[in-house]
Length: 100
Image (cartoon, rainbow, N blue to C red; front, side):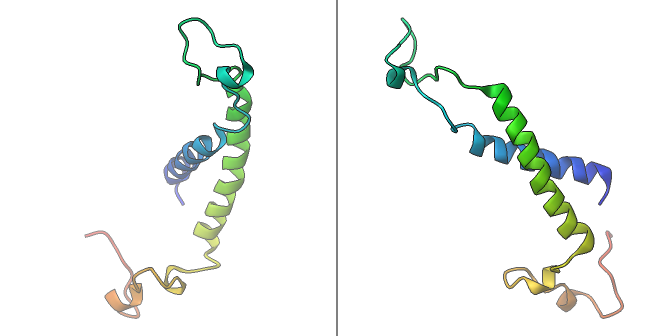
């Protein structure tokens, strides 16, 4: 895996996990009973964005390490997955896929 591919995969994983982490522990102004004048009752009281960014970074690092391990060491190849196309059907036994 090239370092640019590693960074791109990490960023995709980071943003995906961020959207999963954002709702954790959020309490709205309506739930707290303290709605600011002119504010939306559904607005969060304390969004804790710095904590969520740190949790997202840690979780994304763990997930990225798993993805990188599978990509580099290939304990499961694409041919083992039933929903992936069989690459050996497209290329000969001694032929490797290359960009044309």
